[in-house]
Image 1 (cartoon, helix red, strand yellow):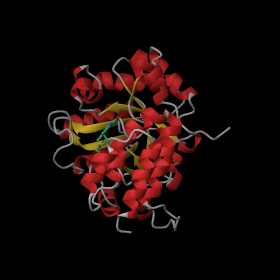
Image 2 (spheres, protein in one colour):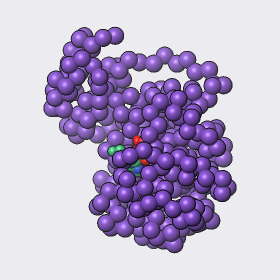
Image 3 (cartoon, rainbow, N blue to C red):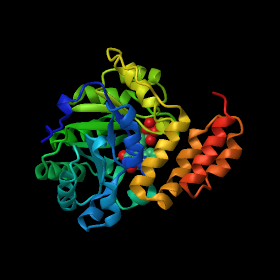
Length: 324
Ligand SMILES: Cc1cc2nc3c(=O)[nH]c(=O)nc-3n(C[C@H](O)[C@H](O)[C@H](O)COP(=O)(O)O)c2cc1C
């Protein structure tokens, strides 16, 4: 039996792939892990309520390939008792850890008191963590933001201390408030201050778009989580990891964008079937060619592809006409 995952034994600084609904599915995670196995991947958020009520769609979302291990499954919800069943299913799936979403700013999510709405209800947030910790053998973590409407140092510190006391082993903080959504710039100072007062691991997140920014922003933290910069450029994780771990003499042979995009398609088709995979791949393909001459024209074609064959032919044509 594989040894149990623990955040303690993970090499620091940790490099994590952010959970991103509609993007970081099994295919994308497999692609990242193939070239950068050191990355810890988080799944897209999955509803604890839906898992409890046997939703097939949600169950599919927590299915993954062996190569993605150790994988952290992210759950969202507000009913502590629903997390018990959900945590059991996650544990049975062979996942390495459970992350609880307390950061999602989407109106639909916070409207039903899920996601970052929990920042306004620290007691419930802590009760959820405590319930999951009591009912699973997996390490539990939380992902949140620096505040709801605004950043308030005392409020955030008190929230994070409650999460720690409830038994979480790690907390990831996105340096924006809920109100900011994804606009403006992420503030990292509140994250460094949180690290100073907690005993558990703290990962920083927000706007990391190069190996240099990752190193600059790390400071006293235990790791960095990267999201949007991986769109169309999953290999950025290789370069970030190497910069964070200069002792690691990685010189793996990396594929070009064209090979990578095709591999991504193959993995998606394998996990979701061609029809659904090609619909979902459209947005990814459009960003693989960002900045190429004639990209706008190709993009309008890529977002209409329906079959793998069609996509491959178009990618071949783009490669032939692209510089290097
Ligand atoms: C399309 C999209 C989907 C996201 N889905 C989730 C999610 O399911 N769970 C979560 O905790 N955060 C989610 N996030 C937030 C990211 O995990 C991350 O915190 C945010 O994008 C900031 O990091 P970045 O600047 O590196 O992208 C999502 C972000 C985007 C852009």
